[in-house]
Amino acid sequence: MDKNHKPCPLCGKQMNRQSKICQDCYLSKIKRPENYLEQVCPKCGKKFIVHISQKIRGQGIYCSKSCARSGRPSRIKEKPVVCCYECGKEFEKYKSESKKNVGELNFCSPQCWYKHNQRENHYMWEGGQDERMNPENRIWRQAIWKRDHGKCRLCGAKTELEAHHIKKFGKHPLLRCNVNNGILLCHKHHSMTFQHEEEYEQLFTILISEEMIR
Image (tube, rainbow, N blue to C red; front, side, top):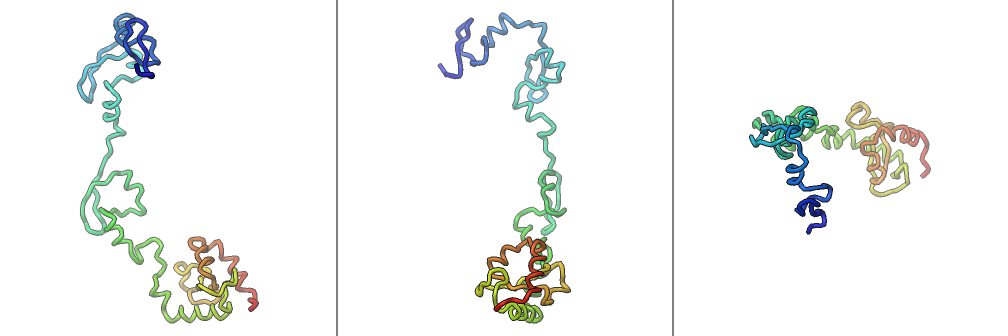
């Protein structure tokens, strides 16, 4: 016998360990017919009986858990038809998926999303390499290098150096070529500032205001 079951004390039939007697003995000896009603399952049409107390509580509508789960309004998910912004294809998309969108645009595939989110359409676009590599910015980087004597202003490293804009390149176009808006950092410390530029502004401004010891 299964360890999760035990014999019924009245008939010896195998039953659940939590039950005092089996269902057949209960229906034949203890059950009061007047306390039960016959229902028809709205999902599958099967007839079944429920206790009056269940009916009063608004329960006993479906014959089984599977019918109850499939028949609930919350389980019926709407899939409105939307249009792909990139290729124009119409497709169905759950409302819950639309709520997760970054923005209000819809895309039918990762390929369409990637094709659209390039250059100025990307949320992290800051002008691109073309603007950073123009002659004015090259002169700016050389001036930063000369002022900071070719050393990282945080650790003094002389290799893997990069010129960093104290105020973000994309948000402050008028300060892009201002020497006082730049500081020389090694690659390690430059990487630490990514997406935390504003947190380092005050520190870097103080550092460039002090004369650096060669």
